[in-house]
Length: 407
Ligand code: APR
Image (cartoon, rainbow, N blue to C red):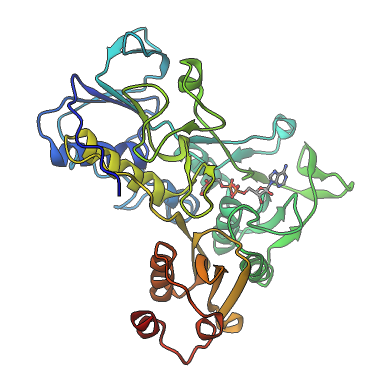
């Protein structure tokens, strides 16, 4: 592990953003350094909240006690709320806000996240339509989601499927339109995707695969095959784009995401980035990617936070992973969705299984349903160089924890 020594920080640490990466960063800096000045600039007037709940608990029940992020662990922070960071002058080390104020920084951390892609051709038809990324979006869906109402979801990714599960629990009619022949194309193995699609179909979700939406009329969505789907509400979940304009306009290297190294450094001195807005080396795929997960946003920020607080400057190289809760399924996925050999453990019929991806005998990915203990073992193995035997991995009579101890 390459340690870069320590930083000798001058002047305030300015953070742009107020999602999980920004709050984790501020918390970690403060936990390790009570003196350094911290400023957070956020265009969101809302108190920071836990985004994963938006498509699940919040959508079903509204706010609960764990919905808002804990700011008490990041005391003595100057909050500039409701202000957009408009431009960045990296020579003067200053950032200009929407109200004209200019803020000086010693270190700047961009934690500006990503925003939902939209379908402009569907807007203005009269059917209530929204993406789901913000608290405002989720509140809008909550207002319109009622038993018997017809919800059409565009996009069979994580967001579309979680909204579908919640909407069925609320008693809405759900139809899902997906451009590809399968769900979760970006981030899950095919076997898991088809299991999940069947699970939804068995709970009343109607799928239209290989279809694009053309436009929306008064109370329906028109598909590219001429089919009209009745809709009281349309939710679009077709992916996200990085909020990297501030960095790009300042000449920092970006490509739908700000390029950062394993220390969170951008191509400009004293400017760092964390979370969904970054494009970084995925240690499993060995490619520069945006790692769109809550755990990345948190842990990349914690590593940088310790360094900026004056601790050791350590590289971040966590194995990417995410979870998704749909109905009674606890889905957990780590690493990459495809290797050169796939091993299946468990039973679809019991909704308890793991799908393991191997490359030259090494685990490069795991996707589990309702098997979190096993998932954690396989996730750890992705980070190791251990070679495993596929026939042993698929044998349910062998205790994986014990097997791993002996190899
Ligand atoms: N019509 C229908 N489907 C489309 C279209 C379209 N025009 N364009 C894209 N899709 C489909 C994709 O094929 C994919 O299956 O939308 C899906 C988008 O899936 P994700 O990339 O997973 O994006 P989304 O579900 O919106 O999630 C966005 O929120 O929870 C986080 O980790 C998640 O970062 C991700 C983000």
